[in-house]
Image: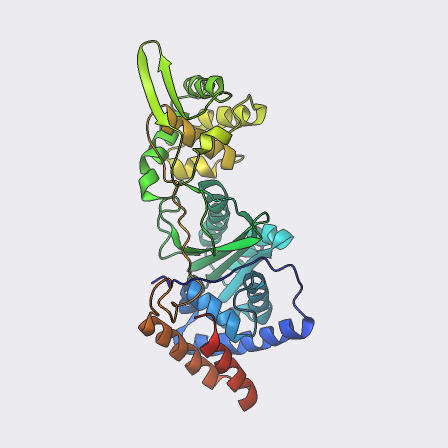
Length: 385
């Protein structure tokens, strides 16, 4: 179940004080010990993929509930909390913020060896890590740049991903949650949730509504470079003078008609697209066409394929072949359980109470003083709902 609510989730440019981080590490270690004893490592992985639970955990460990820093600091604190004890916990955490995120593949391989996963299991985890990052940058084109990638996995091979992107112009951040149980198809509705304080124009190539776009995009590269470039050239001829609508004809055949004025989002994204000749785009299209990927996932996984490639294929699919993808932002307002004034909807009492009860049980079993226990419970009761 995805918990929904509204909160201001602004970018946090400050640094976490050393004393606070050390405290979060200490409390996080204790909380994970109790959780492991009660529920096992796979349950921890599953709960990390729940945005409401993740937000509550950060709040209980003393971080601001509505700051972007909760994601990065909580992940770093949990990673530090189990350092050297991964076998005992049966859990490994790879990646993190900025440059640390790029270390995720080698850390996953090391963690897989550490937890004695089969060699193939380790390779699969590295692949899933890489693909979740590609999906959230190339298939969810929402104006948020991914700068945090954390990969959690257990000794059984269950995994979760928590990624965060920023929109510097709007001063906002959004978070992308994945869980292996849900992501059986990495390119079709794979997320457990995407949460954000704002919605924006989004090319969502993972939506069910984009299924035809995914199919035609794959067929375009399978048909060969020459055929694909003929379609790209059609767009390039018209991209400089697109206004309200476009009719594209080859001989007497009308291939497509599209109204470029969208009442909800004001303009169709093709208006802003630069279809002047791009040597890099042409090079990638040539290589992937030669490879002839079997399916859309293989197409996305091909080295060098990124947002511009997938956007170009999507626009060809739409404008020439009429396969319109989804432009609906998949993000949910999801930082709290509801509002006391029923805005945006009444408080979901069962879910809210269940979250409180869960953390209350964990807190009671933690080896902390009475005063600190009261502080943790107070934060739990007062967080953003």
